[in-house]
Image (cartoon, rainbow, N blue to C red; front, side, top):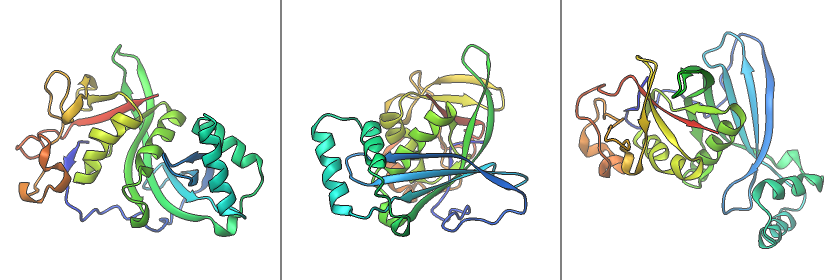
Length: 243
């Protein structure tokens, strides 16, 4: 498990919902707003039995009978100082959802994850195993907000065992800004390492990413961040956020 970087040929295709042979049930449903936007999202978490992933969260852009009215009302509530959670509650109370206009815009796969807290106490959370956001919604803050919601829902969320440069920047920058504290954890030793600081480096100097087999010239957004030059040097490190 590691923040070793991979290229853009990401093998975990979630653009369509995978089919699983075992049973499943909807384990959680919640609504949230995309930051600085008037888009209401619905996250539906499905838990699977005997599948490649323990859970998949499908995220929909919620459709409404009067889109312009909803957008205007959200702006009005924000101007009145309401926070996003209160705005979502008031919007849902209107009863104006039109499910025929709702569209799926993202999917996130994750597994159960056990680890030890800094004080040595056992803890349970989830580990991201795959993510897909439609190109039309990429870069709008959706993934960071979904990770925030999953952290609030499950208390702890760990990063994927492989990341594209975009995913690495998401955790190094966006997740720290949107969700909060990010900790570096050694899975092999089952031990806390240190807090992730600004600039993708631990507060005591730990560099938790390596670039795998990528050519440094192909790092894209990650080119300005530090990394270990040794392949899989960071193989046993993951990043964990907590509510």
